[in-house]
Amino acid sequence: MQKVVTLKGTKDGFQLLVDQAAAFQTVLDEMSKLIEPLKKEAAADKPLELTIKTGNKLFTDREKSETIALIEDKSNLKVKNIESEVVTIDRALKWHNEVSTKLQVSTVRSGQMIKVEGDLVLVGSVHPGGTVKATGSIFILGDLRGTAHAGSEGKEESVVVANFSYNAQVRIVDHVHVIEQAEIVASGSASKVEVVYLDDLHILRVSPLSDIKNLRPELGYVTGGLING
Image 1 (cartoon, rainbow, N blue to C red):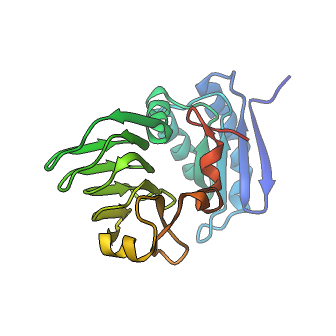
Image 2 (tube, helix red, strand yellow):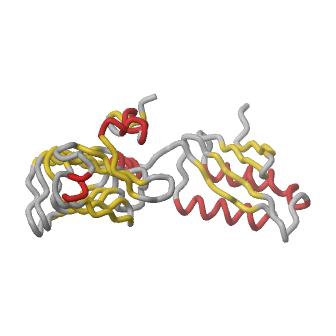
């Protein structure tokens, strides 16, 4: 007969494995019996940490609160986390929006803004005073003369790819770089599609598009929102 709860020791404390088929009240009863002897093993001033793994059983917020209260009241263990292999619909949808690529066919004029979650592919140009903003990377199949803000919620590995033949402003997270036409002409890269990225020193750099695979190799392994390989 499979145990309802199983306790395992680790170098960081303990793991409590829960039978996903068991009723919640049964899980609580078995936990209560199992953790009582552990009171002597964890001093109150330095409690051992406990991670609870519930497999395909997803605890509600109420069940999590009851579980934590039971364990921490009956022992000197500190519940570090309650982990499940189940993803809620809301979390799955949020994750899908964060990693999926959005396609927009549009000209972004002065005063207009396109704002998306995830990566943005814009087929069109961004005029001066126009803004495109994404939580991921931005790929513009056209001229960028306005502002492109990638990684708007902190994703530092985001990049901006565009034709930087005109004055433009690029932001990645909270770092800003102004592309000036004189700068482009002087570098001999007029009318070339390039990539702007944040380097290890948190400095925005401009490189030829051919370097993107070396700079961000993970870009080639994303398919349909899933990491491929």
